Image 1 (cartoon, rainbow, N blue to C red):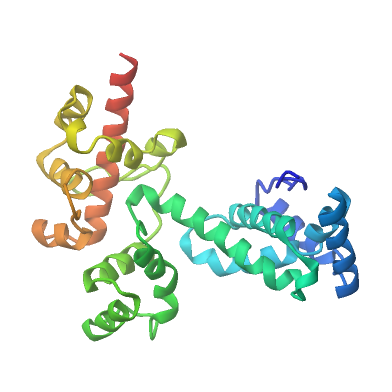
Image 2 (image 1 turned 180 degrees about the horizontal axis):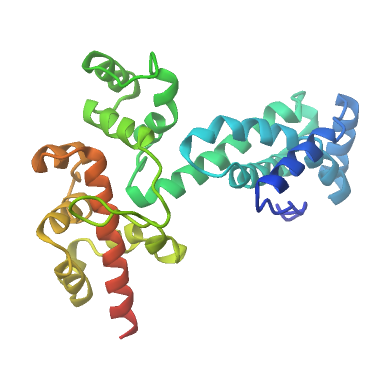
Length: 287
């Protein structure tokens, strides 16, 4: 049976999202007896209608879990869509004879799908690429003792608890607390601010994926060489330290210390440089 056995409505805007949430909250819940019977029909007879009823009765669970991920700057509608995929996977694998309710079993699959979605959408700024960093990414907020920034002692405690370096904790805190960036970009004193529209147009060719593929032996390729030549010295240094270095890459904070600016400023310069590289590499590929 296919995982996608329930059409999930598109959630294009605020009004449709509100209507969707109201609709799923009105859907009836299943009793344990009904759930067991439907689970048996699905496992023994591949009953799509049984699967549909099980999914519908748990859509409100996905909405509830999606609210816990609202602090990452991603649309709730997208979080719900990904969570619904996790729910459908859970229903497909649900065994009604194990004595565990579907709601308990589905939580893991919903969270796993949303977690992966969040990480995929933060990959462009090279965040949470290891198991320890993912643990830091999803636990830093809850481990902070207050709403302010961590002091040195608190930073060391969090780093020790999660098995990462203190500088990784500081860098993650900067990323998670950074302000919103306008899609149209803006102006600052010395350089044009980042315009995310420049690199969001083509999801299939994000800068991080292009640069990661160009490491090592590809560094000498004509396309990358031409692209790097388009950058100023500071931008080129940041890109090479973050993406093209053998072994551990430089952190935002270490580069911030080197250039005597904030880590957030380094992140903005990096994003702008990535946008430039992507354009030059795309032009080179079609030449």
